[in-house]
Image 1 (cartoon, rainbow, N blue to C red):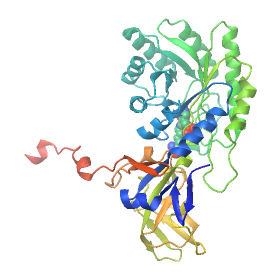
Image 2: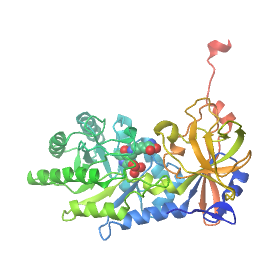
Image 3: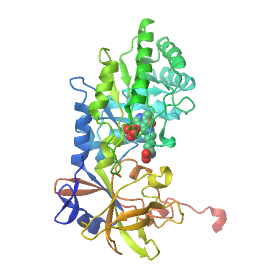
Image 4: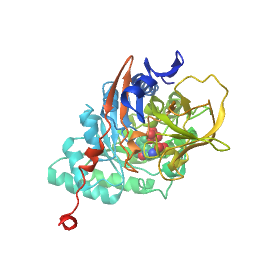
Length: 419
Ligand code: LLP
């Protein structure tokens, strides 16, 4: 479900035409629908009702302050993996008690920042990290809430690069180690162990691996409680997939919630989730303009968005549907669609069936609201892509385009080169 549809022959985001945004803001630009973001959050959260769960939006999927704020206003928390993401979440109005701090490479400075901030929970990924955090907590005279991230040796996800739950992945500790670490954390007066965390992958289209991982966690809760250790919370991660094209829809949140209920329904424990893609992917498009059409046996559309703006096709062979902003009327033809970057990898689509397009026409890369702008760069000395948020008939540029002068101003030529 999303709020991008043709109205009067033009692709619109809610009540705003994408061509009006392109004319005013320029292209490429990301455009997000507030209504879609809010709807996805509500559908996910209410799937667990009457159980009250913490839905901590994975900021890595979309770190724009206005997007996070849209969710914070609905009561969402934030799942963060760096001090930068914690600061973004706080700036966007997410209270510390709804912020989860995850990630394998938290630095001492970042851990200290999270402890001082008083985040909801720090998810610990290794023995060494537990020791470091204990030392920091002692020095700061605090007792941070922690969970141990379990690696259940169940991998899942849409691509090898985004699978996290297999035993040779860098994430989490084995169930045996997690049990030992949890007991150790209980014995440490500087730490407040609250529970376990698990996340096995992203763009998951099959619920069976999730259920298998949850069962491992459930068994661990029983073991820990059997040892007299309290387990108050479980963080069940993110990962639910979204449809990127005309394929069978991934399981809806209601089916996912049914599995959660099946495995944990009788357990007195507070649940949290860290969905990213599910909330924002279909809430965003990358708006782009055709620069020119190269005349080949199969014509090549060269568009003004590049892999620096939307990395997913180059990095994961990801498929993004492409829609012309002007509603198609002529029969489709086949195109390759490429960006302007000097790499063959800068190819969005091969042999794609699209309505006839010409120089100057606008297109939208659909389902680009997750891991689009957050993974963008300035490669090839291009502008960092701007972002626009729509609500009803209003829109606002929520991250403006950096000027080249601003980028160049960050750089210095050493004295030895100019003397
Ligand atoms: N929690 C943890 C610990 C994670 O590692 C991730 C994603 C999430 C939550 C959110 O997962 P989601 O609900 O969005 O699937 N750049 C890749 C996706 C990388 C995901 C990494 N971890 C892409 O563009 O497909």
